[in-house]
Image (cartoon, rainbow, N blue to C red; front, side):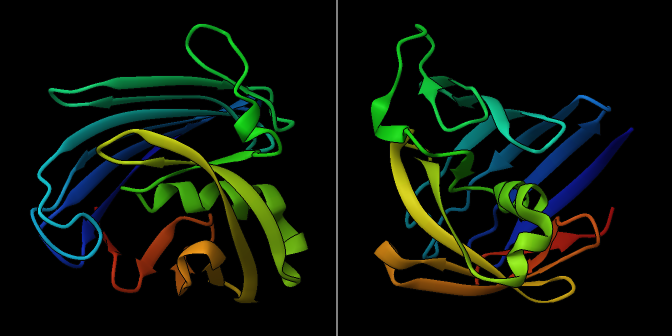
Amino acid sequence: MQRSYRWATQQGGGCEHLALSYTDELVIAEGVVIGPASGNLFPGELFGVAYVVRCDAHWRVREVEVQVAGGASLLLGADGEGRWSGADGESIPALDGCIDVDLSCTPFTNTLPLRRLGDRLRQRQDIQVAFIELPSLALRPAHQAYTCLAPGRYRFDSPADAFTAEIETDAEGLVLRYPGLFTRIPT
């Protein structure tokens, strides 16, 4: 099964198109993001990014490819248990314990922990993610937390950034509204 989704940034004119494919063994997300010209998310930056995130059937990230238009690219592999490697196959110990990835330019990556953690989100779940800042491709581990507030409503916390948001999702865990950042566009 394949579905398409679109989001617009709430500041600065950015947008995203995502093609999401499911099989019994694999989830593949292919997205194209046109970065906004201004706003708090990417102040003063114009950019374009294409990405592919491959997950196993349990929504654990197995591979991430990111290509910045006119710029660099990044390829990461993951074992689904918290160990990561670069394009050369060399391990990246700084990301040990990170099951999910967070691409700063897309609301889609919020879906990964929401789907993977499921009912455990009835209580706050603290997680480590492999955070990729775009368009720079800077990579670092980041502490985040999710809590289900009601069906389709989640509290997102990024303690290091003192950032909190109430995210609204559809029944599949895909963001409908991420206050101040993204709004889903009907397709």
